[in-house]
Length: 458
Image (cartoon, rainbow, N blue to C red):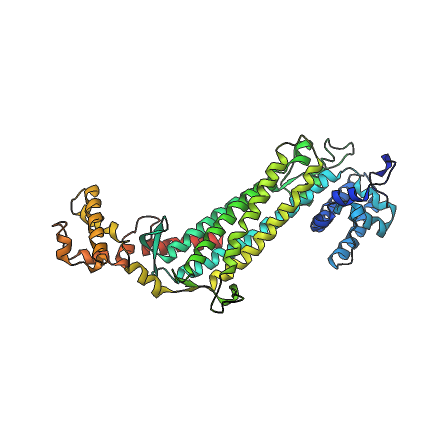
């Protein structure tokens, strides 16, 4: 088949130009969406009398044959046909003859490709939401088993205050919940239909855009044809949301790497999610969370690439916009792999509760509770803070932890200390008393777990 646009040209396209400008190597991923959009378009053409009902029927049957060939791996894609749209049109004409050429009536590749990407991104966003929910479910499973498991809480990567391990894990649940909310909200913009905007100015044919929008499950049509074919905000928004999501995945992955090291020894990842060393037989490397952490740059790069691509483009469509797809495809694939691995890796993670408990007993993270103890007894908190600083210094110099100091040693610093100080300093008590809303107290963590389960059921 000669090129769709070839009538105005006197020379064939240079082979290097064909290869350089062709997008079929990657946009064939849009094949099913392209056929879905074409089926809706040809249905509308027939009902609006733009082509005959018989022609519309032939084209629909031909598209279904092409669809089956693609699904069965029997279709051949040609660089000379440039993109997925012209490849499918060529296959359609091979199936049903010249009548297949009427499919393109009343539309352009400009609104066609935009429609394909809206359909693709809607489908993939909904799929990624199911994967995110599975990750959250894995977090809840581990949190339920570790409400009363204590772990040092850190600021500046220095031990700060003991917390429930479930509380620590649930922090990621809520990060991922916000990621879900962002992705769900983005569907409002994804679900606009550009079909019928044609090249940039609409079409003289009496098309019915509302009909194709309804057929394709879109909520509304773009009210401006220039905007319809040039808008890539919905992809930018997806890439922005994906960048925040992969940031959260990376932060969690960093903690998994740290916790599984011999220095922390708080968890052990299942062998199925680790690898060994080629020369050091004792090694068990947390390669999966390391790679999850490393994939972050790919998604950031896709976002920055598209922002840079669009910043200088005049309306409406420009060939530069062919570069909008690979980053989107790669980001979808990257998140698919990351989320699919993260859920089972968390579910099978072995939590070393004894090691965590020992860690919170061998530090000074309960120092704040001594300050609170003195403040409750009437000492101004700032003065109490200074007193406790001196006690910690004394304990460090004497190679003792706070629970190991005698009451006499405490009373050297303040007469307000009594024997009940030891109850206040017990790590379980320290955590249990932080029962303010959203705190790490066990009752609050149980309540938080209930909220998390409610969100999973929605």
